[in-house]
Structures are given as C-alpha cells and as structure tokens.
Length: 114
Image 1 (cartoon, rainbow, N blue to C red):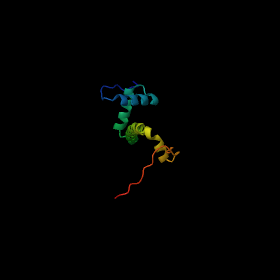
Image 2 (image 1 turned 30 degrees about the horizontal axis):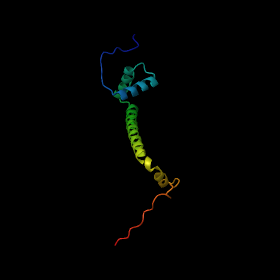
Image 3 (image 1 turned 90 degrees about the horizontal axis):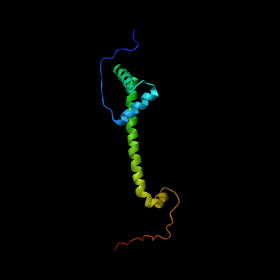
Image 4 (image 1 turned 180 degrees about the horizontal axis):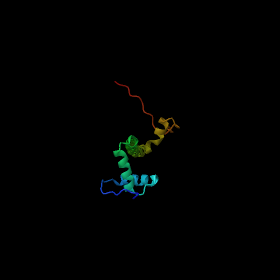
C-alpha cells in the first residue's frame, strides 16, 4: 500500500516575486517539503471549507495591505522631513522643543489699514 496518493492532476498559477518569497518563507517555517506541497495543503484545506484558513488568509491580506500603507507613509514622512529640514528649528519650537534663537531675525510689524 502506497503511503502517498498518486496525483494525476495539475493546477498552475502565477505569483509575483514578493508573493513567492512570502510563500517560500512560510513553507520553510512550516516545515513543508516544497512550495508545491505547501500550496497543495493550503488549497485542499480551503476547498474543504476550512473557516480558519479563510480567516487566516483574510487576515494575511489585511496585514499585507497595512504593510504596504505603512511603507507608503514612511516614504511620505521621509519626503516631508527632507522638505522641513531647513525649517527644523521652527518646527522643533512649534512642537514644544527649545525655542529657536530669533534675536538676529527681524520681527514683522503690524500693518494699519487706512
């Protein structure tokens, strides 16, 4: 009696490099023999109506979206920080830090309307 079932059907799908890398990391951490074995196990569980797997996949998708958004925000924050660098003393003072030395800077005067 054979331990492994003979498999005669093929299922194929494409992954992005990032998706492949994530799958490969999970495959290693879960101790699967191969990515194919790992993908087959997940697909079969899902096909059999495993609600936990569906929940896990939804959670993983949400985490991926959050990760992408965080990276986007980090890029934007770096861009804003570079823009603000020449104005750093004023920004620090506005945030409650040490007040910048304004003794050499001219003070604006109020204009009277005529």
